[in-house]
Image 1 (cartoon, rainbow, N blue to C red):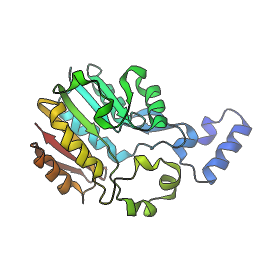
Image 2 (image 1 turned 90 degrees about the vertical axis):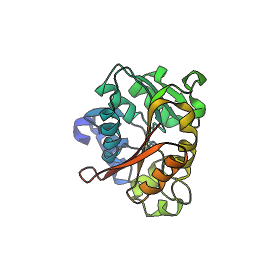
Image 3 (image 1 turned 120 degrees about the horizontal axis):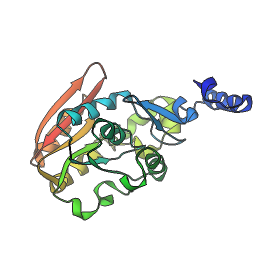
Image 4 (image 1 turned 45 degrees about the horizontal axis):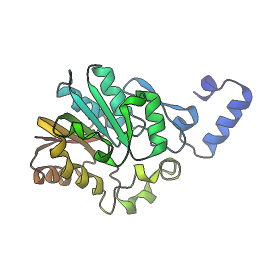
Length: 229
């Protein structure tokens, strides 16, 4: 892949040196594959994981035609891009607090779809009460577990994209508490979680007045909690 991407021998040598130093392959290449799409990534950004394809699959099964969709903690916009590929009729809004991530997301989604800010604060107020689907791959690694992550992640991806607080659920709490006021009647909130944390995330959704269920895929090693208003 490095040989195919490098335009010159000098560029190949530089890319190999970066990979040896531990930079994630996708950041060296400048792209990552997700749901069959080739998406732009950059040094320092969160690299889309295959397990997150379950989030796309679950959202797609809800029916997307003409729906208003919000991709929170969008990173490089992988989930939003995959949902647009499934159904180009959706009205997509993607937000992230990390400027490096939103720069990459604008390359993948177009500038108009990407907003920079803290969770729902980035969204226009006119969306309040009319969002049909909220998807979120928010950070859910407990702070003390960051040090056990692969070197590629803990050294070369932004901490804000990994650290979910003491129990990994800080962002899940904030998202579930605010989501009902943004969801349209019958709308859905989908949050990627770990299999161990999913019951807690589901409990948070129920506490916010949503009906919650957990979906797990052994194939993708992914878990998604779905809350419905």
